Length: 226
Image 1 (tube, rainbow, N blue to C red):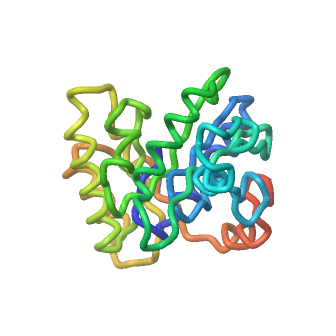
Image 2 (cartoon, one colour):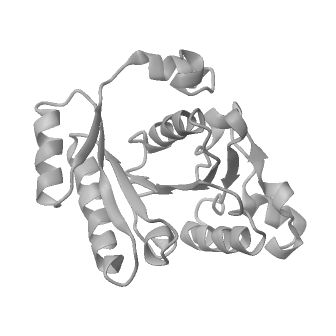
């Protein structure tokens, strides 16, 4: 699972990582757990995928949906699902994550998949957003952060959530991924935070405009400029 502060680039980072994995002939399912529903758009070359919650609202309930209604196939046959969220100010987005994951399990979405990736909003580690951590849905959590204070604050909070459930389940913090924002001493700050959390800095992603160029075309970098 990929966690991180809103706007930090976790959806872009996760989709680029998964596109590279799919080039290695791995079968992948992406489960977007962010109300913005932007976890799959680079894979699908689309604006935003219809979400489980919005489709359920149209159909009447989640029980009225079929797996084919909510799952789209994108780049290199990557399977894509977005849980979505309620209208702003109404309901609980975390509850939507729980509903969506339960629906996917009941309908066999995980069959024949090598990797399942959860792309999760990490500003608020409430019960719903913590579900991949709490109920052993994810084995490894990667936190996307930068040298900015609030991004590191969110990373620390997410780590607390992982620690809370690590003993009761198999979930572990895989490491930090630093998305460079050109702040002062960013690499040193990221390495220092990783050391304090007892983890490692997996990768320091240098800022490069090619990522934005690819995003404008709704593509991953590996597809846009292989």
